[in-house]
Image (tube, rainbow, N blue to C red; front, side, top):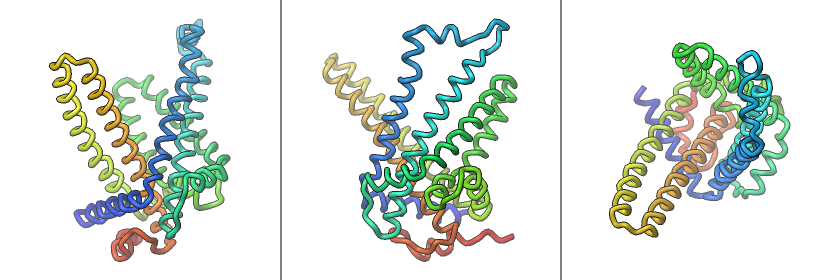
Amino acid sequence: MFERFSRSWSLIKASAGVLAKDRELLLFPLLSAICTLIVAAAFVLPMFGLGALDGLREDSGGGVSLAVYVVAFLFYLVQYFVIFFFNSALVGAAMIRLDGGDPTLRDGLRIAGSKALPILGYAAIAATVGMVLRAIQERAGWIGNIVVGLLGVAWTVASFMVVPVLVSRNIGPVDAIKESALLLKNTWGENLIGQGGVGLVFGLILFGVMLLGAAAIVGAAMSGSGVLIGLVVAVFLVALLVVGLLQAALSGIYSAALYRYASGEGSTGGFNASLLEHAFATKKK
């Protein structure tokens, strides 16, 4: 187990090395964040402005109206499409770098654009899963929370390589999900520990940033300077944004590398050959 963790941690560091060579990869999660905020505003603000939320909450029978489910599904669908689109662009650009190329923002967007239909199909599946999990959670109380948590983790792990599969192959979303789950069976250790490693590292970083930010804000408040308070808050928010962008970029690069070696596509630049040779050996039956 320790050996698996060591290999996965080395792969995370190698992913950081790839990001250091192509810092423009950070633009993909940034664009994704901006577009998801725009989508959220496009759905929420008109409903607030028109007072539609009050009318959508309940139907005449006291339950949640069909319109709520329709709007929620459409919101999930558009949000997931935006997220998967820019994640596909990130993974596609990362694969160009892993092949020894020098990707641009346009290259990533071009790759994602060519896969728009499968990405939309995958977004529809993910939106459906999200709606089902939400329905279970609302109807089963605390037991539902536990079930939803377990199912959510299982879905996240099993679908971790769907985007790299869609980017690399001309297949539909259903087949991509099946292949992602199949690859998970062969690389479950690296998949789980790799995702957990990225999450743990950035969780600790985020915790540290929040502690420092809180201390800095308190110190600025004690000074009584409104300008200083605003400046400290702005720096704090930028720091949170940078941490989030780094985590998203490294996760995308990691998933691209994991897929390439799990599928047996051979070695690529930026990763130690010996590490990759052993890290993605097929799990023994």
